[in-house]
Amino acid sequence: MPVSLPKTKTLIGASLLAALAAAVTPAQARTLDTAHGEIEVPDAPERVVTLYEGALDAALAAGVMPVGAVTTRGGGDVARYIEPHLGDQRPAIVGVVREINMEAVVGERPDLILAGPRLSDEQYRLLSRIAPTVVPTSPGITPDAWKVEARQFGEALGREDEIDSAIDDVEGRAAELAERVQAGDVGATANLVRWMPQGPLVMSDQLFSSGLLEAVGLDVASDDLVNGRGVHSDPLSLENLSKLQGDWLFLATLNEEGDDALAAAKDSPAFARLPVVENGQVVPVDGQLWTSANGPLAAEAILDDIEAALVP
Image 1 (tube, rainbow, N blue to C red):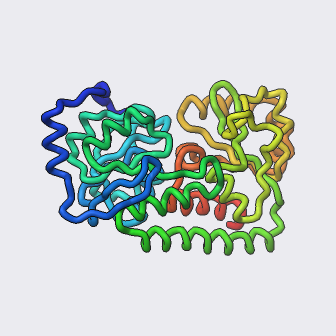
Image 2: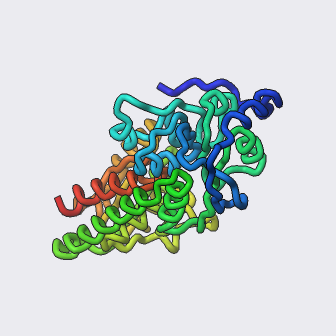
Image 3: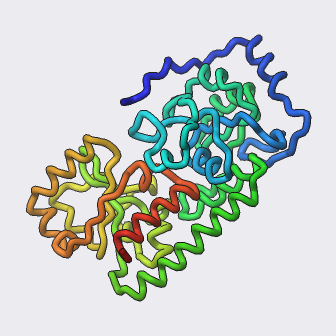
């Protein structure tokens, strides 16, 4: 059930902010380079709020349980793949992906806030008055951007070694899977598609999950389809599905509407005629994980899906 959140406030009482600033000023601090310049962060933060799915993933991978987090895209709570890493503890929901509930953030009394690279300047100014706010310096849309961001979050948490170890584990597992995929001769190309009510979107080969498919030896086909924004194609009509020529089709939906649209498409002759459908190499995957998440834990979950599909 979607979480009902109070309306986001853009104004916070000056007296409350002043009190919080005094409360969270660390006795011992480290200086960190961020997208907003150098900031001081506490040596051992105890109350961390994450406002970006990659930050929540990295914090949990580093062994830190945040006190607050935002919902996943298209959902009312954290992403499903995160649930096994929470146990009896879980962060309070302090907003949705694009709308932070500032009152909820204040209520968690954070001593560190980890935000995403697309955080607006206005939100940064408000958040940085609550607690030191880390916005990573991201390389943009590249397959390895998640590693750069995760390492910066690990540095902010004082858990660099834990993040490095988690990334090493992902890279080692991907390399091992690549050997098995090559030995199995299962095919060399793939399409990653997010199925939406308005039609399928072919995802870029520069995305996080595409990079993992490439790491295990599959060439992700998308260059001639992705639009100028560089993330995905415009919606394809069913008549244009023939452009999906990969040996494998990884098919993601975000919510029930996407599931319903995909179910309808499967009844169409255009879908049934795709070689990948005829060969039984369509792999349904969780869109929350494959097209919205990033981080070491997400990478391991995606590799689980790839292993189950290609080298069971």
